[in-house]
Image (cartoon, rainbow, N blue to C red):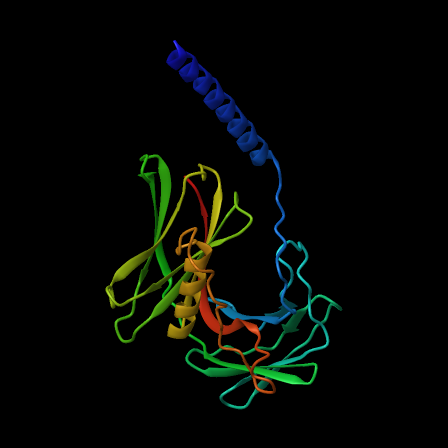
Length: 283
């Protein structure tokens, strides 16, 4: 009889413990926990993406300057007062000017894009000079777009394939940008032609939430090998490829060098790409 009483009491205790745990878990799901994070000193970020859309002059270009900020901050600080220019291999200089004060956006209206020509970006800010060198890469045009309505694990996801013909005379690298009407932030994909050089291939997009009538802006960029490697690292980090218990990734450095104080490096990348764009309506 004593044994029965002890077992009964034990069961009651375990029930109480289970109830307490359930309450704690439920409450924890509702609470917002802000972790105190150390914030490093602001670092310059240069978004120097020169894009020449097929069929246009490519004379209108922009370079954006911002700084890093705290993890919980919702406003990205802009950078004014810089001297920004891009010089090609013929020593022709194109000046970028911040026409709207405090916007951090520096505009050029007379840029001349030329395939396979080398360009050097120079940014002078607070007595320090940042430079980056890159070559403008061509891109193969988009030929067709195919839609599959039976994709994914469930067989109900919509999949989009964007086809192009890779030229066989060189190693080529591509960046795909997908901006759907249902997502505020675009998604990206990179590809190299190691296994399809000189053949037809495609970029791939899938979204379980996209439906008929939604729109998808598809952009394909011709990019350099180094920019391909840079974007590939960023995409892997954004996907959390290291798992929940992995070591935090190191800062991904671009091709921008501080010539005055190398340790005070800037983040971002200077690249030049010919692009092809399609605006697709989901069927």
